[in-house]
Amino acid sequence: MQKLRNSLLLGLVAGLCVAQTGDMVPPEVRRVGDRLACLCKSCKNTVATCQMLGCHYTAPARLRISELAKQGVSDDAIVAEFVQKNGKQALAAPPPEGFHMLAYIAPPFAAFAGIGLIAWFVRRHRKPAQTVQPELSEADVRKYSDAAAKELERLEE
Image (tube, rainbow, N blue to C red; front, side):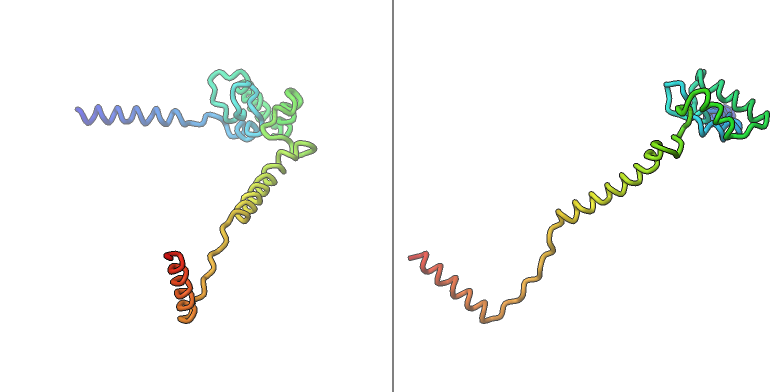
């Protein structure tokens, strides 16, 4: 009896976990919704990925996308309708034209500039390599030892 109860409990927990991750958005709505931003002002998601219960923008937008897709309207035309109604803020990503191109150009430029700055900093602050000291001959060692001994004798006087 204990095994049966544990199995049922495990099945219930597993069922709840699956229900949490289920994707209820139809493919045509997801395809267009990924291109449109959720304008509820509470989240930064797209229409396809907004998970807010009772979102006042996403639910009607998904319904409208679904209706237009069933009528055979193209994805670009659906997006254009939302842009016409809500302006360019309805887009999830800025259009690649005009000043908005800066949003596409700036990140790689900043990354390369940062890598260049790091390389410059490392080169500038790198310690110079240690040079190998030449070995002294026996005569040089004797000469320096005699000089050191004379200096010590002079200091002791």
